[in-house]
Picture 1 (cartoon, rainbow, N blue to C red):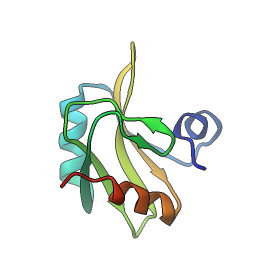
Picture 2 (picture 1 turned 135 degrees about the vertical axis):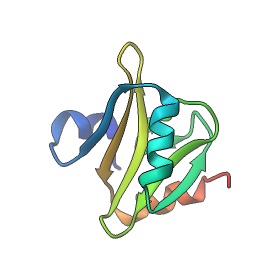
Picture 3 (picture 1 turned 135 degrees about the horizontal axis):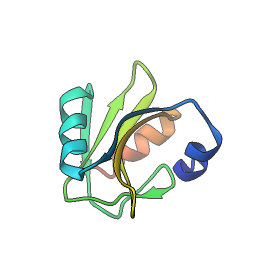
Picture 4 (picture 1 turned 180 degrees about the vertical axis):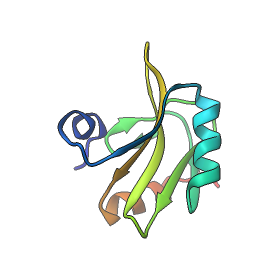
Length: 100
């Protein structure tokens, strides 16, 4: 199972597009830049982390790159837009919990 917290601590194979930003700015960035966007409810567990944010929370999916882009909020640090590679089955799990 993929765990986002562990992955961000132990890997360098990810991209941070925005840091210490507001949730709305990160959400707009995902909506504008991801080839496919699905929305999930806050509290949904995505790649091992509970997603925090104002509903609906956008998750960007890029099949060509094999990545997802999501707003990642850490209390006291703000929200970042993070793009991480995930296996196809994780991308399908995200699509399975979409609300739109």
